[in-house]
Length: 381
Image 1 (spheres, helix red, strand yellow):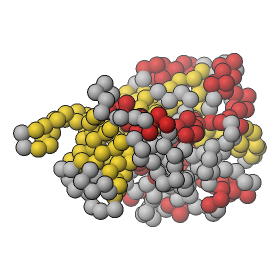
Image 2 (image 1 turned 180 degrees about the vertical axis):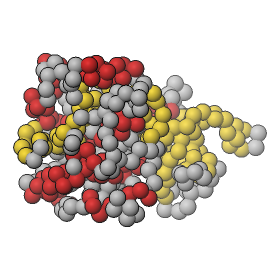
Image 3 (image 1 turned 30 degrees about the vertical axis):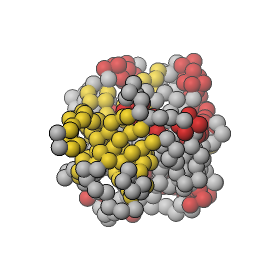
Image 4 (image 1 turned 120 degrees about the vertical axis):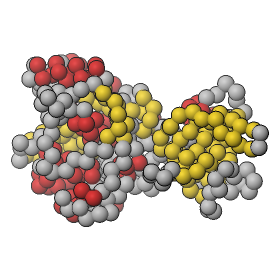
């Protein structure tokens, strides 16, 4: 399908640069049939039937942005961690080797990066104009990033990470201590202390994402409590949001767009929760497009409406014409025009209805994208 099908005019001032003061106070545009009403995300429990199953993505955003320097010149280097591959022993000099944690990553520097050399990530490095937190400024921990090479299959860097300065610290500890929150490119500022909390869901559990499952950012523990009182069941799936969520569509036909793979897991607990919802005739409500991709990727081909417990990688592209097999309702933020995410929402709710809602949201001063407002819609029949 042509990507310009999913276009609407979005002024840059509608793109939220900061989170709302209260997560669940975000405006919620509710699409029911041909009508649109405004609520807040805090009203979600009252908008769902009793017994509905609410599915959340429990991925945790990594502090994936590492700011370091070349030890020989002091030149600044930015390393953006994308995906952990595993452990490896590498040779760093003749007769000298070390164990490293290998990652795929992006790299940026004023001069070309030289493979076989190190980048040192230490306390005191911060984006321009951003203060260094006191705990980080006082840290003796350093991450040593060895530039190993470039992967043929996706063009990403391959880097090896080790820790020095604090023997008891793991690579995971050092990333958490020294890394920065990887805010999306459309947020035109450096990360701040508030982002460490607000660009993370309150139920985040499994490290692995480089971007937040943004619809879940609206959910509070109080809202989860009201869902329970309303007799709604809640379950978790995992999909680690990857770089592909920011990859612009540069082709005219979405079928030609190369989707990045994202790792997901559907546990037996989640699979069983969906089976119970089907038994009681309750809708499955996905909180975000990442949940949709995970559930639809695990749909049981022999039992419509059910999912299989499984883990793996998905490159699922959803566009109008796709037959949804699991998800009945969707809470989602407002997405970028001409994007695969907007294509999915249009496939779910109907292209004309969803685009009309986006245009109305622009006119009514809704906030867009990761830190923006949301909409709730049922599946188009």
